[in-house]
Amino acid sequence: MPAPEHHEEAPGDHTSPVGTWALLCIVGAAMTAGWLFLYFGIFLPRGVVQ
Amino acid sequence: MSDQEARRFVIDHFWVAFAAFALACVLAVYQVLERSGIIPAIQSPAVYFASVSTHGVLMAYVLTTFFIMGFGYYVATTSLKMPIWNKPLAKTGYWIALGGTVMAAIPLLLGKASVLYTFYPPVQANVLFYLGATLLVVGSWFWAGIMLVMLHQWKTAHPGETVPLPMYANAANAILWLWTSVGVALEMVFQLLPWALGLMDTIDVGLARTLFAWTLHPIVYFWLLPAYMAYYVFVPAAAGGKLFSDELARVSFVMIMVFGLPIGFHHLYVDPEQAAGWKLAHGIGTFAVAIPTLLTGFTVIASLEVAGRKLGGQGLFGWIGALPWRNPMVLAAILSLLMLLLGGFGGMINASYAMNTMVHNTAWVPGHFHLIFAGTVITMYFAIAYYLWPKLTGKQLCSASLPTLQLWSWFIGMAILTTPWHVLGLLGQPRRISDVTYNTLLTLAWDPYELAMILGGCVLLASALLFVYILFQTQTKGAEEPDRAVAYAEPLHPVVKLPAMLNGFGLWNRVILVLMIVSFAVPIGQFFFMDSFSPSAWGY
Image (cartoon, rainbow over all chains, first blue to last red; front, side, top):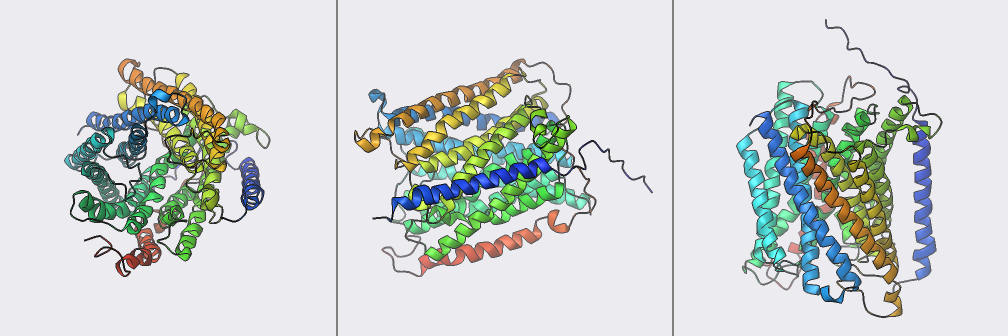
């Protein structure tokens, strides 16, 4: 039976990507805010199509 | 075909792609100058629309198709460790596609095919344009078929083994392209070609637009998937780390392939030929594509975080500064993800059913697709070329610093070009106009933005020429490259056992078939059961 392949571990391999989560939360919040701004701040004030 | 011949074959594809790209960039500067009206001597609607059409076709069809075919052959041979299947067939596909490109270029450059890259009827081009475009697509089908045969052969020879991720993604793109191109193929064969040949007097424009919508949006994912492939299989290794999750990558590719297809009607939100319900359904599907995009964002950024922490980065965001920003692949990934983020935001506005009316047919739209295509996609094509050029030519890059300078200049140029373009859209500037000098208060407000766009266009042209210069110098004068082996990223946790659905495409093809029937059967079928001014929807 062949020996199982050795998988080298490095620092950070088992760390949860907290920075990525934080970054994506910021991005998600910014995109939501941007969408709301365009909808309520620019689109709706222009009124209905004449 | 020896290894050397196979490399040469890939390089040939890339040079066709990049020659088209360089010419398209030259035309782009003319267009932004002409439209602004600051040089009256070059004002000409006829030349402008011939130029825009050529620019669009070169960028969207020639650059992409040849790049994707060349990259696909390289990925298949290196990840599966097998030669190209049926080399004569591969070469035939290449020459058909190249012949089609030349055939389409003639009427384009003569101003006989100024129909823009969407070639919507009733605007009509010379028949050579339609024939050439058709041959380009047919040539690419040879490539797609060869990719799938190679995948099948490898799976037969390696029963139960996991298909290497690069090839899995490559095959997903080939399948996506085969499904995607059916719509435009039907439009070409049954409508545009017979119409241009004079075999029919009229065609149903609504049907033509519906069939083109089938192709028009998923084709963006066909262009985008090589960029995603580089994110997953090159970027983690280039950053000094590992891929955060092989399985998540496969899920993303499958989701893009499945969700990306039945969504084209968001291009038809204000068209009369489709009912609101169908448009809403496609609109919802459009938002579903955000899921694999977010998955990709997460997996790639997490892979970069793993690398950054390995390189000593501390704290919540300290790993970002620790990344090797001077590595072209890493830099390109960061810059292109940034543009994907901004372009994706614009896409959310386009896809929002109500808000679409605010930006529909305005300058916002080309601003958006340039940010996604020329920003995200092309930036990663640059990075792939910089990485593969030494492997393909056996020559080291002619400079370590020029590629990063080129990538930064492209990013800055793209920001200067596309930001005012979006603003102009919100200010009400229509797209597809050759002149903005109306001398009214409304249009005078556009002037500063037009001037900014000229600056952006010039920066981009300089960057594009620098890119071609780097590749040419490398190939002709570079020092010998000792390492010609490609390094695909390893997953952080080795794949031990993979569900069959993430190691093949049988299930997903059936899912796509059902989704396509649900999404398109009635919207297309209706044209054959309604009264029209011609004998049939096709026009015969």
